[in-house]
Amino acid sequence: MAVTLADITKLRKMSGAGMMDCKNALEEAGNDFDKAMEIIRKKGQAVAAKRSDREASEGCVLATENGDFAAIVAVKCETDFVAKNADFIAMTQSFLDVAIANKPANSEELLNSKLSDGRTVENHITDRVGVTGEKMELGFYEFVKDVSTISYIHPGNKLATIVAFNKTVDRQVARDIAMQIAAMNPVAITPADVPRNVINTEIQIARDKAREAGKPENLLDKIAEGSLHKFYKENTLLQQEFVKDSKLTIEQYLKQQDNELTVTAFKRVTLNVD
Image 1 (cartoon, rainbow, N blue to C red):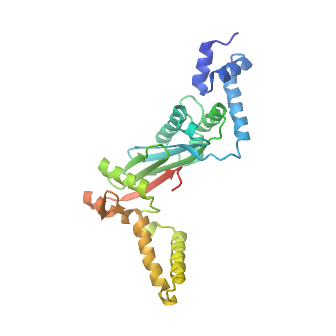
Image 2 (image 1 turned 180 degrees about the vertical axis):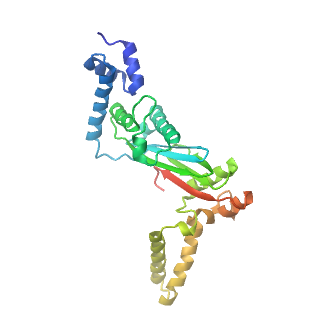
Image 3 (image 1 turned 45 degrees about the vertical axis):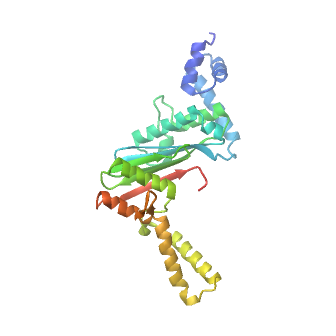
């Protein structure tokens, strides 16, 4: 049976592969769509194996929220040309939709989640590799959960943030916090949340700088303590100056809305070099 244009179009819609790839796969499979899909997938696997040592530093980062759950998904590729392709962005969006619907606990669960066509996220990535010839991978999957959540995608789809709050919050206020995180890249919500190894590193850096500047040894600890307080002010979310009003810290801005309102979790994913 000859391969028809309708058959090719149907397989192209199923796989996302090019017209000639679909025609060749159908001819090889004798018009069996399942076999044709397998041929296309094997091509993607072969390309992926060949490209495994390549660096996938470009990609698309998307985020969204649904009530008490918000997620970020980033799919990485090799070139900005592919990253900006509408089909690649749509694929990333479909993975994000699955994440919001299924709330997977980790990246492995997301990769094994099925889309409406029955293929897993991992299958879709492999098949797209066969179409583009570029290395692709699920770069990041992050989520937060609490009473209310918000997401923010910076223009260009290279940076996104998600934030969880302990109480219902005005959407614009929540968005302000998400944009603050995007702009100022805090390492934690409060000083108590900063990892011990980060604190130790900052103290050592401050002591070394003070010693190099000729400060007495008996003052090094006090100087390091002052430097650490400055680090907290610049790098912990609630102590940061609000980018829209430097007279306020983020904590003060939130308490203007509700004295009990606070951030309970946030994630920031970027493919840019900070």
